[in-house]
Length: 106
Image (cartoon, rainbow, N blue to C red):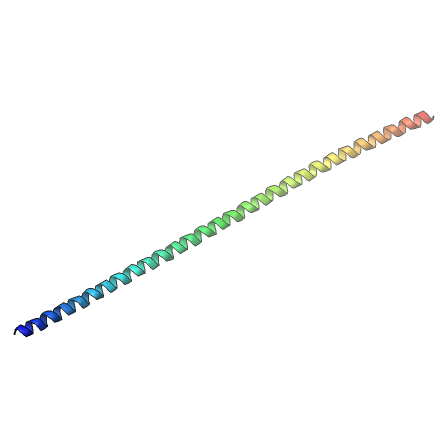
């Protein structure tokens, strides 16, 4: 009877150890799954944040390009007005000089 009790106790301990090991394996798998999910979520969040930042950079670049183009257009117009005024002044000075020369020749 004693031998039988030892066998039963040994079997019970073996089964309990096996069940405990199985529980630990399942807990480890659950933890690994949670880690994988968290990593996946973080990857999505980082990807989304990177896309938003890239979109903002594109928008800022577009706005800057528009501002530069607008500034260049304004500068070109101002230069054109300056050249026009200079040309008119030069034409007026040439005419005045020619008139004086013509008067002096008379």
